[in-house]
Length: 313
Ligand code: BYC
Image (tube, rainbow, N blue to C red; front, side, top):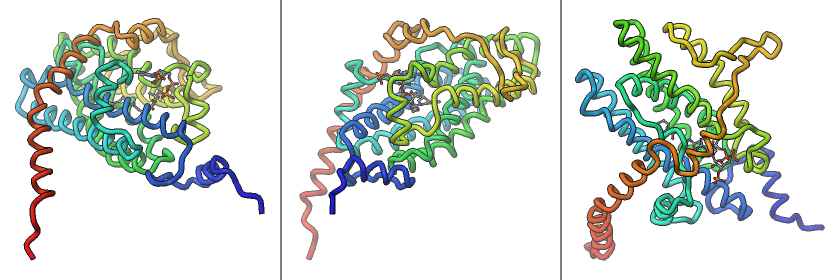
């Protein structure tokens, strides 16, 4: 009988919706692509703590502060699940961090924008976590087992994050005129960068074809972006804010909103390190990593000591 080549058997498994687990055979390119995407995702979760952390000391009430603290801690936790999922592919945490610091690995463009007012915390939760959920619900069905399982847990927490952001925006929108203006201003500044989170249009997306074939990605950048827009326009209407897009219009034929042109030049600029906060975000991460060196050394020394401990007979 003719022997099947491993690539074919791999694709049969993928097509049958079986999960790929760490010890299973996988094409090198599948492994590389997953490391790229999962690590970018992990780095985004951790770098994403910075714009929100900026407001912990200035939260307008004890309740708001407790909620924000809990949310930011969750994001750190998401980073940890994702780094662990990524490590199952045979790369170490040190290498992943090194790739981030050297600029080889990306993190989401969205976290290179500043959080200027408290309303920005609302906009980040509502729009950024809202966009993240749309993407991540789809990724719960990704073909790689550890990534898919991490996503299931992350999605549960992200829906709380989205709601806390929407609550801030809703309260500000029904507050004083000045508060409503702050909420609208935050929406104006975060709307377009949130649409960029889904990546380039499908026709320009370098990795989509392979990622869809291998079911790393289950839906395309444009499909997910459209779903996010359709959901969010209605949410803005409910709280009386307007989406900053004069071309936004319901298309009865498509049963979707049509929307204006995304500024891809701005996106490329941010990806190339020239967004408003790229340098600051990276400098903070490098500094925090250096400051934590003694913690990693102590943890390693403790682990070593435990390993060498004699178990009493
Ligand atoms: N920012 O071929 P494409 C979160 C890069 S939410 C930066 O379409 P792919 C959080 C892309 O990496 C955010 N880079 O790529 C939320 C590629 O460059 P490389 C994180 C981007 O992978 C709230 C090139 O452009 N979520 O963490 O098929 C609070 C061509 O793109 C971006 C995830 O990462 C971008 N926006 O599709 C706290 C979700 N878009 O790598 C935290 C998982 C594209 O060849 N990731 N690029 O140098 C994904 O679903 C996919 O990676 C993407 C892009 C949809 C983002």
